[in-house]
Length: 164
Image 1 (cartoon, one colour):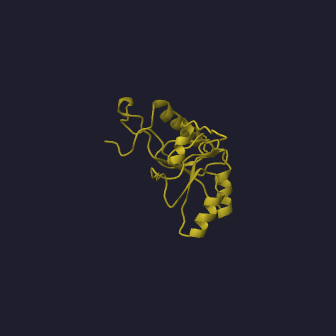
Image 2: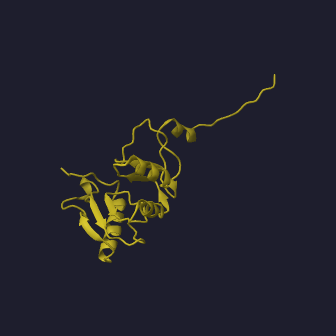
Image 3: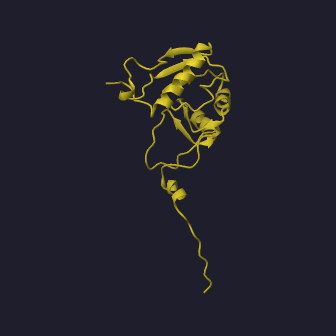
């Protein structure tokens, strides 16, 4: 029994391996944990990759500038809230973001300034089915999911004006 879930397919898992290996072999970052396919993770059992944390990445690192869609967490230091928001907004993507703080004012300030379709505060990836529309900003996908607004792309609306 694996303690983590598989990725969707072999190319997804292999792409994450390639990105992580390239960063670490080029001395771009510091591996804090994980970083590979677990022993015994054969293709017939799923496409597994260890939960991975990498720190000390340069601003142009592929792990920071790609939507990885896998269990890889790059850790970035910031000198202030403004610096953290600048770093987060510097990517061309904006699907989701998390703000972790005990200060509600900080949470609201960061949430309003982050260029992301969803901003979680003190949590991540919780998606209640009836929540408002979920979708990204910038180059992070098109369309919206969840909520009543998610039906709009599937509907054909028509306006009929009648003069009696």
